[in-house]
Image (cartoon, rainbow, N blue to C red; front, side, top):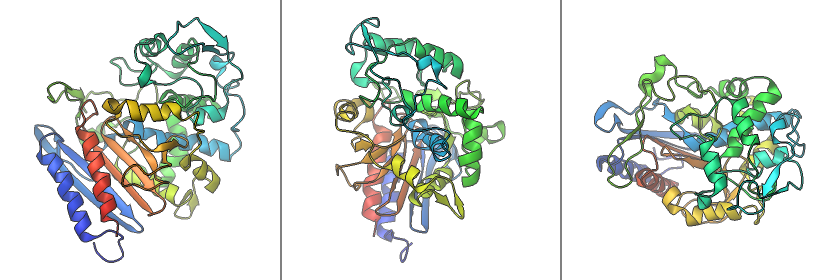
Length: 407
């Protein structure tokens, strides 16, 4: 691997050794990692599909991408911006009438009826930058609004799956906003709302539009919102280990599990399944300013909007709080400084990765980033959820050793 690869042979050996050490520890049953720089790609598949053995991990193993769905899902909206079927500063009401005439909580911890009218309508820009006024605020657990979000089934990862989009929108429309539109970055709900918006603008399912405009042109043949029966043997068991004992608890089986059939709600916030090669094609397209081979998938300015910081310091306050005050949730992931559209963007140097790196991590133990300065992509996929820090630690060590391997 020496020569023009841009990685040192010794560095790649260390990368493999560090990943293998995590698998050998018994805490990570298996993983697949892809690193790419310039024209060279290097893949490691280590361990097994189940914690008690089973088939080996392979390069084409299909993983639940969790929140690393966000950077891919947003591309559908960028296509609509490029085609002027959406405008950044248009109100969303014509497509999402459930969100007309919003009320906003006077204070985050207050009762749901203690509100003031929204100062302005929610616009497309608010949805794309995760600032429309509602989200998963892990610093506000136990407040009436967060309880209502969970009770209404508005987020994934609950025992009950999310309802179909029209019902989901009806429930969302029954809640006040936490913050004024455009005021504050908030996690998750915007990414799911984006999928509903795309479906209503195009008159097609979110997945159908993504497939036509993003997945098929990029050759992402294993990416979607469920795994067909003829590929289900390539999906590992997903574990959410017990936080007290560390014991492996099955969160989702492949056969008959949540991803074995099409979901009622195609969630842009965390619903995709994919492979290292499919995600590599997507992030390489972003590094290539929207081009794939001879074909343009997204315009150069659309890619720049997605992959550079869109937040003011005021909007970013909640984002920094999530990273700084919820290390027990993110295990230190998420301290990047900025957010573009659908993904984190590094605006300060807090670890080995440089400013300008963009991507995101997923609660199922996934990490996907690209780095324009080094023309580098890194993708690490595991089947261990972040109920315990183990997969987050592998992710940290992956990026630490990957950057040491850059020649």
